[in-house]
Length: 256
Image 1: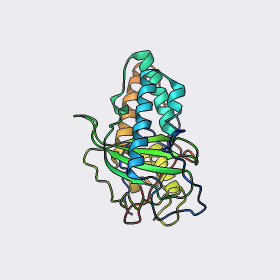
Image 2 (image 1 turned 30 degrees about the horizontal axis):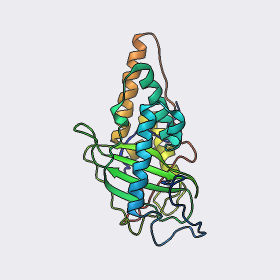
Image 3 (image 1 turned 135 degrees about the vertical axis):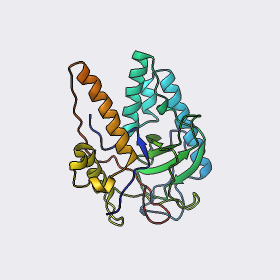
Image 4 (image 1 turned 45 degrees about the vertical axis):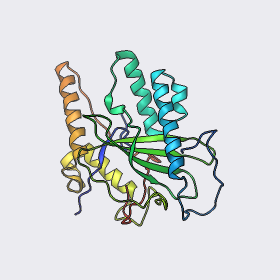
């Protein structure tokens, strides 16, 4: 059975429970085809809009402005950053893993003619002790803002698969895509089962040795030990949240 490895530590995991366009951005024409022969954004447009998104998020966090944050962050990333802002406000402690490098190493732009649309960006490192990030931007509809939907902290030494060049764009992958070895929905449901049941899961061997799984287990173990020391306890539940999967096709017809 082929093992599946996750690319990085998902700070906004879709399986946990417990579009680059604003009012001033150019609004594209609505097209009825599901895909086009060119990207939905030029690289120049992508850079400009990404800068606007990240600048707005940084300003919102400095000012503890939740309404401003909502204009440029969405999905699991919005929930995560709202929580982090509350923690920082009450404790004065900032999580460096939330930092977003502003320069990119690789950009993957959707060639979808419909919405929602996604753009993936692999950043450069955010500092001496920081790894690269995979940023996921999403535009829900033709007239909505592109927002930062997710941030993945890539493991050190991770090798990203090849994508189509930015000028031609990458096809979007649906949650139930039947062209892959298994659908993204099935993969995440199986992974959630492994996180919940460990080696008792029937899918354990499919993900055995996965670094993300190891880090999650280590974090849960530390939290459990701390709670036990004060007479407490904790439990973990994992599930796939419907609608929270984003994917682009790789050059070899795989997917990220």
